[in-house]
Amino acid sequence: MTFSALRSCFASLSHHSKMPLRFSANVSMMFKEHDDLLDRYRAARESGFSAVECVYPYSVPVDQISAVKDQLQVDQSLINSFSGDRQKGELGFAAVPGKEKEFRDSLDLSIKYCKALECKSLHVMAGNLPPHEPSQQEELRNRMEDTFIKNLKEVVPRLEKEGITALIEPMNSKISFPLYFLNTLDQAAHVMESVGHPNLKLQFDFFHIQIMHGNLTKNLEKYFDKVGYIQISQPPHRGQPDSPGEIDYNYVFTLLERMGYTGWIGAEYNPTGSTLDSLAWFERFKS
View 1 (cartoon, rainbow, N blue to C red):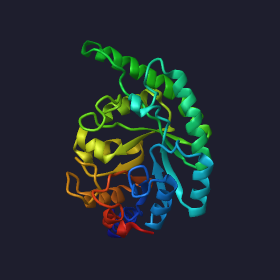
View 2 (view 1 turned 90 degrees about the horizontal axis):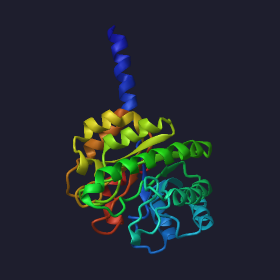
View 3 (view 1 turned 90 degrees about the vertical axis):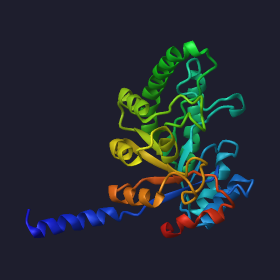
């Protein structure tokens, strides 16, 4: 390679590394100073976010959310599928045997919200393991995997027709969600390969991946071509990115820029103080 060609190559890499990162505020966890969900949308926009994500928007009529979202000119980057009754230990139905009807019905509601909010990404919640004896766990997990794959094969093409990307997210079982079915990257990759559809993507949450796996750089590189959405917070307490903890997010942000990631990054954290006081990390990314 000539010097001129080499210089052009490095210039191209340098330009590639400076792709702007795009952040979305999780209004289910941030801006809790406001009880009203719609006020949290307003607070996120006033704080400089051009997008929001919402774990469970279903308690508010979608036309009300849509009206405020449009007024604020803010994007809806992500919602979760309807999870059911969390007081009863429900965290979705997609992998729960015997809950196929509940899953289909809940998906209808989730699609309604996505379309009204022009939301292009839906986290399809797998669900918790039902009550069982320890000796039954291996058989139960196998049945849940089969159920998950079967349900996803049915709904992922439907979501594609609606212009919605289906996401699955490994969530840690060591601290936060001890009964959740989908916990590891290998497990998620196996499910995705079994479904075999390009509209099914990985939701890569640095908080959960650090707790379950560590080795963040290599794991991101390994699964990068499957990633459709990223979320951030600081383990082990799930605070803002620059709070004391296990992850150097200055390094992570530089890594994502270098890798050319252009999707949304959800700020899904519990502020250690007020939300406004937790946003120092975000100042340099404001548009």
